[in-house]
Length: 138
Length: 138
DNA sequence: ACAAAGTCTATAAAATTTATAGGGTTTATA
DNA sequence: TATAAACCCTATAAATTTTATAGACTTTGT
Image (cartoon, rainbow over all chains, first blue to last red; front, side, top):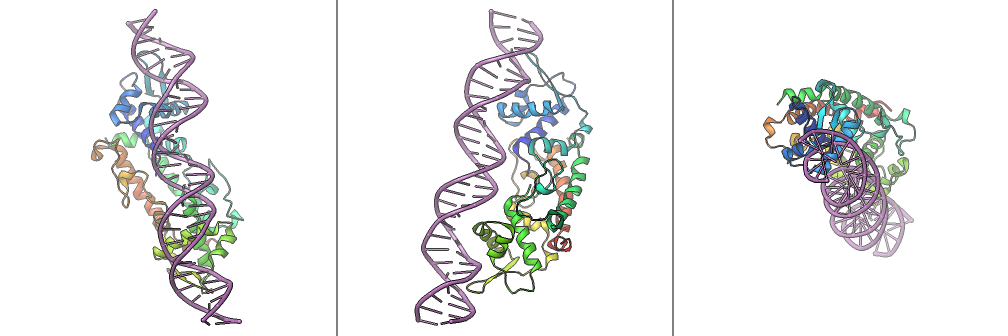
């Protein structure tokens, strides 16, 4: 399951995607719309901005706005950013690799081999679904 | 990512799958082989037995053994048993459904719709990989 | 000048996962 | 039939991660 952080990030991105004609959107507006804590959401939007998905404007009249095309924001990226690995095991993660202590020899481990296959197939799914797909459904 | 519980369950199932000629296998043997805490593994094997994957024999000379064919133990089942939902959001889970508080109307939520698609495609992968596939790789 | 709004870091609270503890029950066998 | 081996079961503790909050700081429009 996704963490609330990632789930909220998706709601925020969706909200921003639906309000692209506005110059900026307030954190508060997104928070109220979904009943999310303002402060919690603040941290999430900050991460999305640092990762290059959002722009922001400080001061009165400021707020956030999308700076990438929705089609260029795949689920895989959002999940990796906020939740970490997509792989089911550390030993098969492309971006967050760590060896598994209980596995003496990774190259001879059937679990490892199968999980690499699962990772690759899962990745296909999550790389092919983007914010645009979400927006298309609303 | 899978919890250690699920990861250890997969190692235990693999071990048992590789020792089907033995009448029984000791918890201790599996624990030692993978450097897992005996007591932690005990609870996991208990769950696998209650779920119908393993049989056990008490008392001296006892232990665990597989009672299902490896091909009939899909990853999806093991994950659901020990980790819970495969779906990325509670609102799209088939087995552990719960509404998402921040979503006013599920039927109009694009995130919900897309996540249903992701769930169905992910499920295909995990239902088609079984313990047999792991054993085939060792 | 003032108020609105994002920035940033630290910390607290809550929840979940991981691990341990210990007595109970069953069974083979000497 | 006593004993030791091995699984059964529930409770609790420890560790980790997630979720939430706090508060001081900076920027900007009016």
